[in-house]
Length: 199
Length: 253
Image (cartoon, rainbow over all chains, first blue to last red; front, top):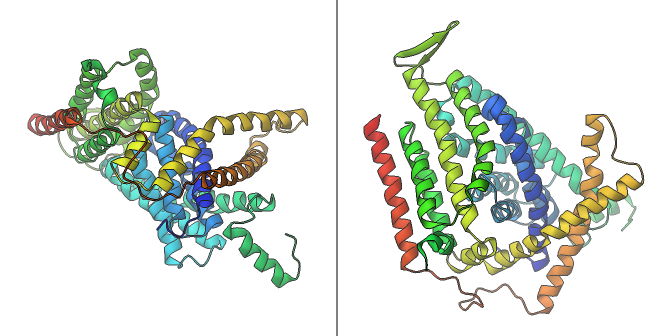
């Protein structure tokens, strides 16, 4: 899988992973305090934040594995920084990454429109919910509460991870830092169609 | 090697696998005894085999207690299984023994998982962990060294973050009163942070290639991470503890 990857793309993934690992850990703290008050449902509405790095990386690098690897790397770095969730974060990172990866794979790694990104966010949400069902013992909870948690998580995945990820990546693209990555080649093509090349 | 250093010296990959296996096993149990006994067992294990800063450990456990309380009452109120004898009722709310046991179990599970995490985090050197993932678990060197580059960037990213904040303050941005304006303003912070991170990543990758890093699999390492009998012994002890707790929980409930 890594054969076709340039080193600079791998390093880009890891640098994104670092920035978002810090963000993720901050939100784990926010979630933990909330969870004491309103229970595990506290995490649900902001769950999308934890999927965002896979959407941003896949959208920018556009290669098979970008979503999975970036989320896994972010999880490894979270473990390196040290946190209360511990090494099992790597497992949940892999699961979330696989969810996003599944959506990109389903479109053959060819389309990166906003709805594909939302779909990737939803993919992460579904996969991570299945994993949480097992690990956090959601089986002991009332089905109607579970339905609420699931709906909130899917919406959060689509909106925060999908749309939020696109919003951030487009902002980054506009700053000109992404020259030399797949995303900017694609946007050059788009602009040529319109007859204005600004790069 | 003094016995108090054993856990610090244990092979990180091995420790990682044992923690993951214990977690996946505990997830099958919904009785309160298994996670409770395992929690106590892990604490004792740490007391014997590691030099632990108990003050720090206690501080770290405070937020965990919050989460556990959240789990406890959510599971009581929204339990799926409400069979069994009624323990107490209040204003039309009833709590059965089945409900109470499952809730306690989930709360103790939070404690048991966190105790394992702290055992790992407080005794493992992060750099050795990644090196061990590469050497023992065959993580691709491209990824392993990529992660290391990212990890080294951590302080740089932090410094940059404060710089951006300061320069925003100088121009009078970022002091909005409304919450929603501040949330929209996150973009102003994140975009410069990410774009300089991208440029840095590019430079680091060029530098690595210029020094002959190809990312090929290798057999010989500059700093080999050892795997010896003591790692096996500690893993076996932890697994015995795990199986013991599972059996005890099954017998007691």
